Length: 263
View 1 (cartoon, rainbow, N blue to C red):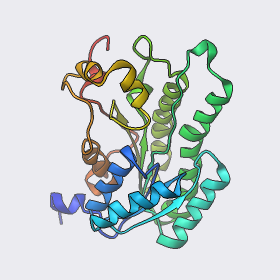
View 2 (cartoon, rainbow, N blue to C red):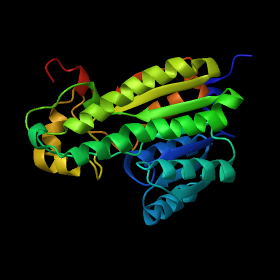
View 3 (cartoon, rainbow, N blue to C red):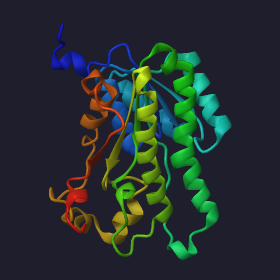
């Protein structure tokens, strides 16, 4: 029987693991999944931030737990995956969101900073997806993986914005999404990416201060930056059965910045 739209978006009985989930975009996505009925496991590096975020979600009636882990380190990722499976059971939805940025002209960019970004922004996504996929999603023939890329992964930057390693890592996330979506489609696992534009956050604060929020917003056809609810719809689409026939795709949530000619 054909399901209703509310049934397709319903996540009751599902479990979601959200990395980088203690603030900003990760916390917004955790809200979206929890509001649709999913149980949430949050992860980031700092226990204090996780405790506060978990309390916020729980006050909204969302069943939430947390684990502090550094997703740049393979042993920490394996611990996160195993503890999540032990405490929550199978993971239905994985949101790979933990990430870092670095600003430096290419000719002076520290190699150590390049490696740091690649380890967290790309390698971390692979290792956690591999572990959760092999231990939970593939055996059950069900999974929804949502990778957070960026419009920075779609091309270069405006003059004066020096984030070569970040752009490269986010471009790699798009390729990773496409390749993994192709490979794991036979297991009924969808893999998609969201490419946010500028949202006010701790990561973007330096750029917003330098260029000005109003100036950056003026380059978007919608004349605004992202807010505290603009990722909720895309997250829920990719995480639910409403998006069960979508895989290997990326979606820009950027107010239209990425489609402006010469932008």
